[in-house]
Length: 484
Ligand SMILES: Cc1ncc(COP(=O)(O)O)c(C=O)c1O
Image (cartoon, rainbow, N blue to C red; front, top):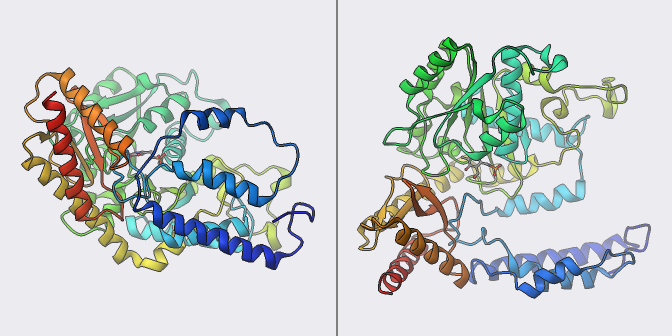
């Protein structure tokens, strides 16, 4: 297939057939890959060859490029589409969103602005999320590349809420004592990144200890806010978490709301994956009590809603204020309310990006195809499978749980192993071995100063057999290592 007509094909019908076969082969390969290795390493010589590829000055046939992609890129997938992938927090991807991705690419809409169909779908998706999480109609939101980006935006809104919109012009360096933000010891690193890159400085991100359930200690939070006020600091924001990355814990949102009201702080929730327990069954759903009381919430569709990357969102209760923070309309973007340049408000007025892709279509396809009941069941099922994994680990002679899992995260170390170095070395070896053999992907984290094995069960393809299989393999590997 050649693209000779000013970058386009001569014959669009022929291209349609070509793409139909291309897509079909991608699906066949996806299906084959689900029965194959979860992950395989990129061979060293192939890695080198990527660096050695020269800048392509001349054209090539699409068949050649496709064949190169199939032989040297596609086999080395990240593995997150596989049912035995439990590493970090990575979603699997849905069939409806896969179809939407093709449509998104064909439409190539710019969702930053103007009056066209895609905008209405993004508004609808944001509206659905407001309903799901219990935000009022006056709230605003937008789709983002993920929770890191959403948290960064929320932080900007919270800063200007505290200091006033004048500071958009004046800047906030030298504005009295520093602003202070609070989160728990379990808060995600994206919070630190947002604080550091916004000029607040991580010295002013106050990390509050957690209780035995890994929830922020609200009494300590209040003590710290009072202390900071006495010292002249300006407490402005509390970032609570729905589903912490290390333990899957949920903070007490009602208590945090009370404290935020009392001390005039912005309440943000990092709900990257945990926010979706809102549509699960009890006891999981109960963990989200009070979620809708936040001033803003960040969450991902590319984690527990299983939608393809990148797809996250931010919702702010005071939508009008969010718009005031981000809106800038130079002359060439001035709305004139007519035709394509109409359609106010524009999504570029609610975040940083002027050019934005049509992410909402992936969510629209996924929500409408499955319905929220089925998606809620999938979330509950992930929580139940995490509980099963925890139960089997608890019964194991070789491992012990680090926490009682409440949602989808399970962590464990070698049983009764007090020698940290030995535990850390063996846990690392087991995780590496399982990855290299392609049997399963777990990741590692640090808890109570031990390097521990961590599983995030946020994969709609995982079944009981997968859980039983990986626990058997973990036990076998532990025996091997403990005997050497
Ligand atoms: C609790 C939590 N917050 C934030 C993030 C960052 O989300 P993203 O990767 O979508 O930027 C993650 C990612 O795993 C997370 O688990």
